[in-house]
Image 1 (tube, helix red, strand yellow):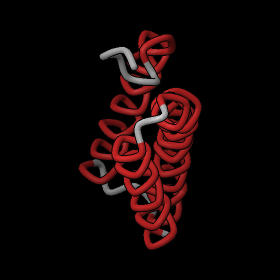
Image 2 (spheres, helix red, strand yellow):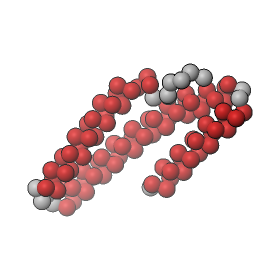
Image 3 (cartoon, one colour):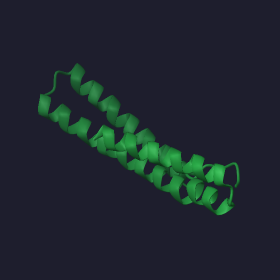
Length: 98
C-alpha cells in the first residue's frame, strides 16, 4: 500500500471547505460579541456542525475506499486487522458524538 492517505485526491477541496468553515466559526464569534439573538447563533452553530460532519464523512469514505480497501487487498492479515479496527473506532466515535 502506498504511503498516501485516502483524502489526498480531494485535499485542495477539503482545505477550501475547512477554510470556509473556519470563516463561519469566526462569524459566530462575532455574533456572540455583538450580542446577537440566541436562536440565530444556534442556527449558525448547527450549520458549522453539519459542515464539519460532511467533511468528516468525506474523509471517512476516502479512508474506507483507500486505506481499508488497500489493507484488505494487501493480503496482510495484521494490516487488514489494524485498518478494520481503526474504521470501527472511527464509526463508534461518530455514533457517540450524535
